[in-house]
Length: 282
Image 1 (cartoon, rainbow, N blue to C red):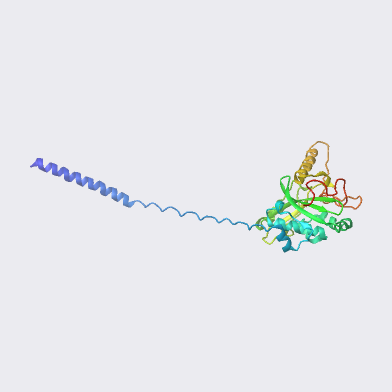
Image 2: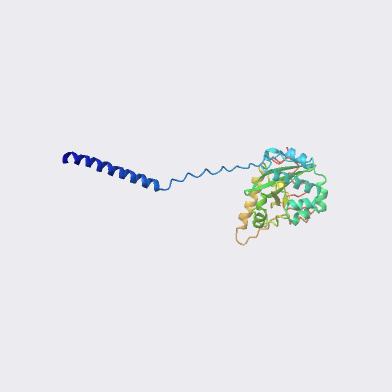
């Protein structure tokens, strides 16, 4: 009898113990906090693509730009605001519009002096064509202005600051420095800088050059201009040598008194005549 009870007790005890263990596990499991659901995926940020810039000829028509001013599509700047600013600067110089030119060139008094110079005014009256090309000088955006006169060519280079987004204009102009303009900084504020319809601001500054710069550039004018400035920088590093940059504030007092800052001489030069490779208008 006892032999039969013991196995039964063992089965009961064993079963009871197993049940208790399982119950305990279930109890412990039931008391623990459920795993939190995974966080929802972060929403994908929508990239705001800037609209494709209008081709220069369309902008030219919309802005009412002088027919003598041309901007080849293949060398046009990738940003519409810079294309527009380039057109307006060229037109302001061609028409002697001091107010518009100063908005586009900061408060550079060299620009005012150039546009109010009687020799410059009489010279621009004979302009047959202006070509605007964009490239880089010393790693910064720049605009080349090729002036075509009846008997010669002349050239200017303008360093470009911008386009500056609306939210960054105050900080940008306060801290702006350039490797290509003579004094390194520009006297521009967010309040007086020219703005495009999208709020972005652009300004131009005369890149140092030589009077009659047309005689020193060839098929790669941006590269040639860069090499000239780099050469001046190297000379300036030599001890006991002082290099005076020619900028928009410098005025050539000989002959017609043309400003020499951006290479615009305003009179025929040797080798000008429209035959130099790479600078003849297309």
